[in-house]
Amino acid sequence: MLNLDKPPGLFRRLAVIVYDTFLLIAVLFFATIILLPFQQGNALEPNSWLYKLYLLLVSFLFYAWFWTRGGQTLGLLAWKLRVVSDDGSPISWQQAALRYSSAWLSWGLFGLGLVWMLVNKDRLMWHDLISKTHLVWKQSE
Figure 1 (spheres, helix red, strand yellow):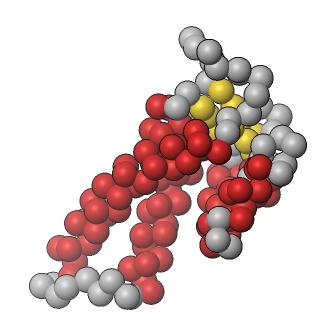
Figure 2 (cartoon, one colour; figure 1 turned 90 degrees about the vertical axis):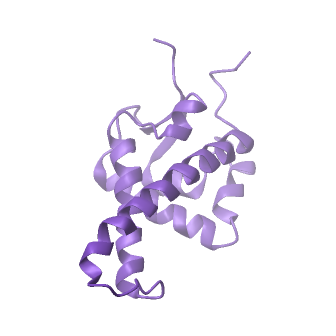
Figure 3 (tube, helix red, strand yellow; figure 1 turned 120 degrees about the vertical axis):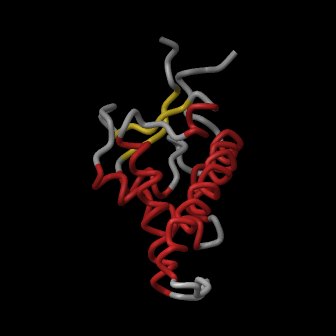
């Protein structure tokens, strides 16, 4: 039985990330297909900074839309979690932007921002702390 008072652990959070990564790959694939008619027969340059920026924006919109609309991506839904503000309310687009960008920082520093939860008494990662958000258990309705 789940302890709903205890914050989710590292394994569950990593499982959410894996679920969401598969869906995000499909979304980015579709976002790339949308660009193809505008290439006039030329191949997309994968090293293009504009293309990378486009994929980064699509990725942000993917997460922010789910986080601000009910607080759940597919991975969060599958693992019975949701993202909320520290006061328990739905997160704002500004918080979503902070959470998304600081998650990149958390991963970019060899995952240090993620494993931070192992030493944080509230089991918060850097992107939780920076965006003033956290994961909670989704209550059965």
